[in-house]
Length: 583
Ligand SMILES: Cc1cc2nc3c(=O)[nH]c(=O)nc-3n(C[C@H](O)[C@H](O)[C@H](O)COP(=O)(O)O)c2cc1C
Image (cartoon, rainbow, N blue to C red; front, top):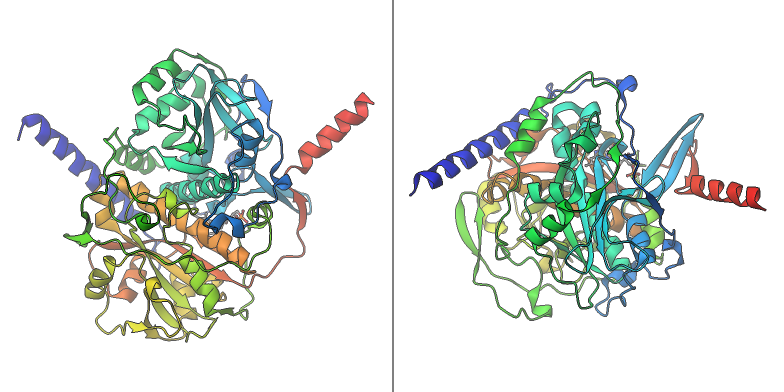
């Protein structure tokens, strides 16, 4: 082995250790929370909207409500015919992913809610576009200003490809302001939710989304202009996360060459200065910068997808991949792809746009609503990867997230702790690792491919509440869950694999949110939970598996004191007053 190779491996090991150290240090436990300000410092509350002052703004049409596509249509094998890739299509894509969905008002307080959820409604995720040959848009790079539903032109240049790229970044400060050191985790969850939101929005247009996995974080920063220090002087920086290609099914959807695109962007004309979100930062969290640096992704050669990311039987793969392998719990096992049956139909009759915009997090559950086992099956099934089906088809890698369910009110399933294994390969490993006393009972009437097992019959309401930082939403629902990730397998990809585990959790969370809403109930993501007590309940030692996200679904209690306003009521008001002035 050369000295250079050894040096690189040492560097990576050091980065992995720093990622592990961050993870352990930011665990919540009984009587010990990860370091945070512990109060809301209203004086430094970050502006929820990033703007690039001086950049030219191009308003986008608000046209999502004109689409007749039903939510149910997103899952039909014949699919939806692709909308043209033009300014209207881009407007709908962003409206239904990162756009504002509603405003809530209580007394004099009014706050915006978006199609994508976010821990604490703090929205660290920013969205960017690179457009080339899109009718109605000048070629170049743009930032999406969700408050105005407009594109801010960051760079005028001619990209050497034809089509549309979407890039996502995180402003860690937005979350750290409230949550302190654990904020980096929440930013990663939000990227997963953002990817899910984008995938669903693309599906409404009959488009698909491909992760451009080989791009390094430095490449993404250069393309989106996040590394232009002068443009961020005095403003909170953004960390690059992910770049995706929009696939519309027409010629020209090919992946752009990284260097050619970066060269073209660096020679472009850049405009705009990022706004300052908080005038002062009373508390800083250096550990977030440290883990961000440690989990930095370099440019990589696209790996052969690990595992059966999609049920490839539906569409023959031109070059069948070699037998797949996954590193689970410290040993390597091979993965066999087993075809999944079709997803059972949803009973939801709403249009996709209606459902996406009405998605909300429940603040409280009624403690009585029960859902049929069939509904639970559909919700769980929708988190499995199927070809050309949002949102998990985006995740071209083996499932590394499994769900530990606390079932409270599901007709046909006795209350207790259950395990939903999202891959066949993980099942024997989990059987070997989880508490010996667990029963692993098959559940009557549940399709076999769902791999749902009852571990323990029990009233789990109090345990679920306690483990989710004493939040009643985990016990008053129909069911809540912990997302058990193959932690070491994720890190085996590289230190950046840590972020991807959260992204997969967020993607699953987005599916749970929309499926809950489609079933007439409601979901809520839960970032606050007691990490190791969850592992102890399951009898898990070591770090082969770690719980990274919780979620809850049930009958919501709606707060009728809040007034609801449409997402872009402020623009409509502006437009009508301008119209009145003109006439
Ligand atoms: C990663 C993540 C973690 C969250 N954690 C919690 C939580 O611990 N408790 C809670 O009540 N809500 C939680 N939420 C819900 C957010 O508060 C909610 O998404 C936000 O207020 C925006 O509201 P909306 O989802 O209705 O758009 C979480 C959401 C996300 C995406």
